[in-house]
Image 1 (cartoon, rainbow, N blue to C red):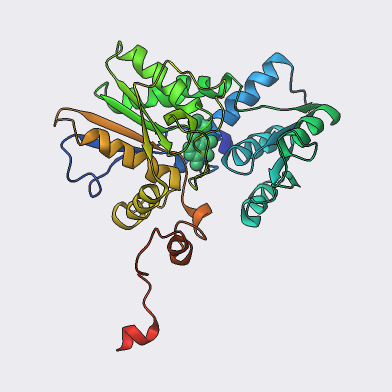
Image 2 (image 1 turned 30 degrees about the horizontal axis):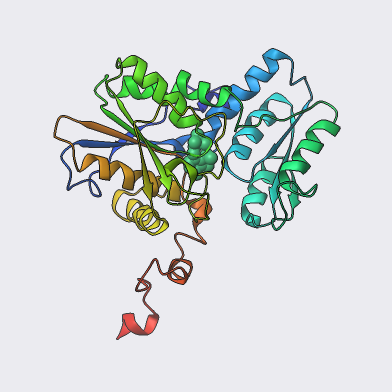
Length: 330
Ligand code: PMP
């Protein structure tokens, strides 16, 4: 019989798939690492496992303890799954702008969700940073992973995602492209690939226009999960050979094309990373192998990126593709 002992054992080992349609105009082979195949639906399952295991080993997280983290999305899901399987409680703190559906996903896995006002300063005691710090301190057995500064975030990618990419491409990968949020993905995978290839593999970060990584001031953008208005410790500034800035519009238009043309219903940061990968691939030749990492699936974005009205309200969509019954019958 072939089965896993628990879903935690199904984390990692995600597939690579060729982007045939959106990359048809470029010479290199362009491959996508599809992280939505993880049980929690995103790349963040990997860091959740590693951060929890390390905290168990160091004694920071004790049996029956409580994990407290400010997160509304993928990291919360990863932590909730691993925590549940190992008997820990989870409290996630998120701002009130986070959609109810996302909060309900976390609750479905058994986590407690504390909602804080969005419209307050980070220094305000009600801000979600401060509330999570206080809860971690005041809850008995409380532990805050802090993915932005936790070295086990990049380490999980150095130990799993990086070696997977090297083996899956039989060492033929020449360029690796990924979005940058905490910086854990690019730092861990980038370092592994640089070492394995003796510096040959080029590492490219994709960043929303406005974020600090591509020289912006931290001005707002709509793509979720990537870009920052500060420099996190998890980000190794020495790793990226290049950072490509991508607009919200280009990111979302590509995200929709990935669903429509490649059968990949993925999130907005995936579209962003693919735009950056194609810009790099356009100047390369047939012997190059470009791999782009797609962090999560698209189900969490149905009311935004995959909603014509939402897209049109930002001017990202000129004409609605959805025909009315009258038009179809005419
Ligand atoms: N895309 C999405 C949807 C994410 O949630 C994240 C994580 N914040 C990233 C990309 C970026 O990954 P990292 O934090 O490792 O830089």
